[in-house]
Image 1 (spheres, rainbow, N blue to C red):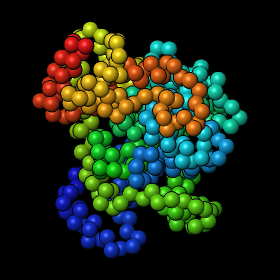
Image 2 (image 1 turned 60 degrees about the horizontal axis):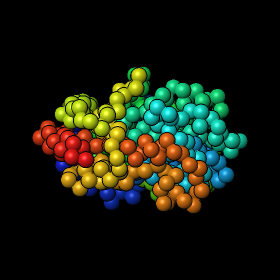
Image 3 (image 1 turned 90 degrees about the horizontal axis):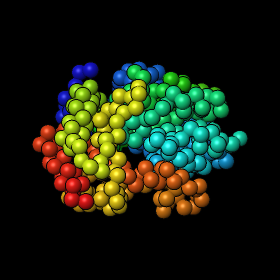
Image 4 (image 1 turned 180 degrees about the vertical axis):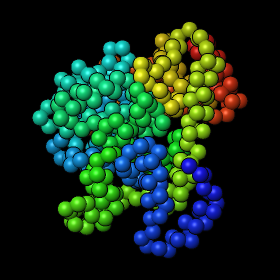
Length: 359
């Protein structure tokens, strides 16, 4: 893919902004995203959360329905399910650290369950084949939260293209970014049409449902952001290779430190290097993560307060069941987003080694 000149592209976008129905860049971005991921349809929206919400609504999931999702997830995934008026049912982590325990998931399927929503934190997914088999056997939609998994593969297939739909973020820091934004991928033409209608107040009708015959919302991606995302997408392959190399290098630079165990990809996984991942085997791991954040090591627990969703204050009104393995996994997780800068990698590795050794 040729890389567009960002300044020329933005000048073109600004010149066309008086057009009340202009959607040139968003449409081009959708075509390019679909081609890059090898799927039939892409729908761009205003955020990764919006992509998840839109995918659920486009599948008719709503009031009275249940969605299974890992307790070890970010709060934005939970928010999307609640925004769809469905009920999130949290599934515990597996006994060996798997992101989602299949036996627990199977035990929580009820007649109201409509979908299972795996979350590929750090660009990793665990045993997605077994989860897909469980979903198929129970006639559930598999909708992937791939917001951190651009370019990650599972047995050769891109994450976000394995389920009924895959949802991605374009927020800054992602491997494809426009500052803010998101998109969903699908091979289902009906889902794509309903998603397109929903994200623009149903002004663009889906088949058999005339324009404005349903309530939608404004999840449109602004044209300047779509243009920036096209520039980012054009350099994606190179950025993906750099990120994978940087993640591997950071783990190597940290090396063997007592109490810190790298979390490696499972069989069939090829992560994108979004984060370098370790398991902490030291006392008070959450406080240690906060200490690392204080000295400049950005990490999911210490910086962003990642915790098992059933323990999140915002989830208390949902009356969630306890998921103790997920709580332990979150507490012991060190997930460090990886920069491209080699000098910064060395600085981060030194800080991690120093703080862990002193703990």
